[in-house]
Image (cartoon, rainbow, N blue to C red; front, top):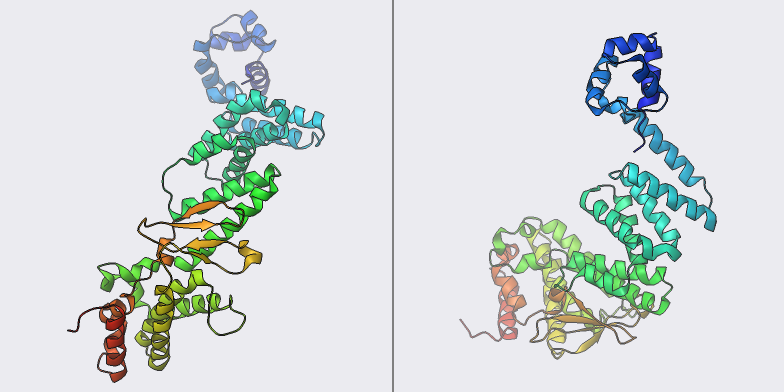
Length: 395
């Protein structure tokens, strides 16, 4: 950092209307020493606190590192950086300026952001600046809370990394749903930035499908935990009824015939959402609607159960998902997405594709939503049907 001691001493001496001799006497040094300082020399470091105290300023202010000076300097940098133009020569000047100021202010995230942008704009010099780009990326991701700077830093790394480096950053461990989506979007962005369009379209279709799965699967497992009577969803039947009914309508939009025959890949979760909507409707007093859906859940589950384990199933809507298929869960306890280009991707949304023959019986016997209709003859008839579907012995 450039020290401002000569300028500060001269300015402060004049503000106090002192001669060099008077200042020298007050500080216990020679007039020649003061003259030397004001002409560009520096005092001995041990004198800095004494000089700062005399002028009633901090040592930081004495050396020109006070907040106001720093802010003015950084603002000057920003103005100069953004007014250098977008020509190759301008990009070069931006890079050199950003490097200079990063050296002065190595903890300033705005300067780091500008430096990352400048490195990417000078791709011909990437090899010499790759380590620096990594350095500022690590700093930003470790300490910066500005989402724009964090997003920009990821963008720069996607552009600059090799495929191997990016995959190394991602790691090889099994991912949860949020990581799967975020990493898929990183790959999508990288393919687009590098104009690898075929890979981009395939990854985009994959990401759209994963995000759709995550939307469908929110809170899915809460209904099947052993302690399910304590799970919050059972205390919100109105909200659950609205949510599950919405998902039913969403899946039915895949079927233009209106016959409620959704694409094969979704027919399992379609059956499950039907069951949950039925229970929630009964739980909030809409008994007739609930029973109507409960009856519909049986053929929907039967359709799903007729599909062999491991079979690849169409997800529908090829204009959005690119003709993707999803495998039904099997003994491997995993589900994969298969794109039309032959690529295969693991997906964490197993629970959308593992509906079981005992689900209806489980729900009817354990969910508190059904407590108010357990004496209804229709309930007894459907419960027996659910027992048979689950292949359970008579009680």
